[in-house]
Image (tube, rainbow, N blue to C red; front, side):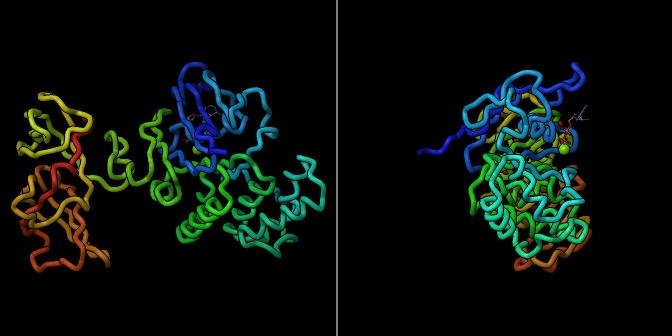
Length: 362
Ligand code: ADP
Ligand code: MG
């Protein structure tokens, strides 16, 4: 059987809590069976609301949600076959690890011997076999979240929802748990809808990412495309590091457009969103796409002054005053480290106009 590319479907979904403001606006999102999709966006952008509607704890104001081709609006949460790991949806503190995992199976009336097998399998997935008798307070934060992950998977759900599940963990643990969850997903192939405000977490874990801002999906694509080809200034700023210049298109007659910057200089850019002469634009360029002492043939070549040099081990990070942007960031590989990289020195900086995207003005 071929896989269902619309295993979860948000169809024209709006949500308002107060009957006035829409906190989710016209959400159309298809999630494939077995996919790991992440909703990424700043606090308040509507991510949790989307998960709550899918889980059944909130109702869409308009539109429909489908799961496995069925409308789910009339199905109560516990009958939707959805597992959940929420930062604030903790383990039952008065139950052992075993009882926590047995709970969703009991609700579903799974016989005990079958339940025991499922519990054993789920605990082995998160490397916690032997912890059955522990109480949650006898576990570390990371172990508790692994139990929560096991509990979300133990009844073989159709979909697992994870809302900032690693938010309370420290950086190292969070990073290792990101890989752990990613590997569990790869080994069992369950559909995961993951929520985070952390862009590096989203890039690490996801097949696709939906970037949210103010209740709207700004861009839906795989991680590399999101980073390399942001479709608007919000996404360009939110994902990774980004250099920007503001200006106006003064020549749009060629493949690359000419932009007059507010500082007076002209640069060549790739007309992505803003394409017409006379229009304002914010131009976006990833730091690693700019190089020092560019070859002659490069179509952008400008002089800047080094403001700061920071050694980062594998590369050196330069902050440069360039064409009116005093915060222009450049990453120089340390293999090409040079004597003239010193604060106060003038250097030539170049980039290919294709890498420099004329986006909506900010
Ligand atoms: P996110 O998860 O992206 O931080 P939320 O979905 O939690 O965003 O919130 C989106 C908007 O909806 C916010 O403005 C928030 O204040 C509001 N909101 C969330 N939950 C409720 C609720 N239960 N009642 C009223 N407003 C809510
Ligand atoms: Mg949230």
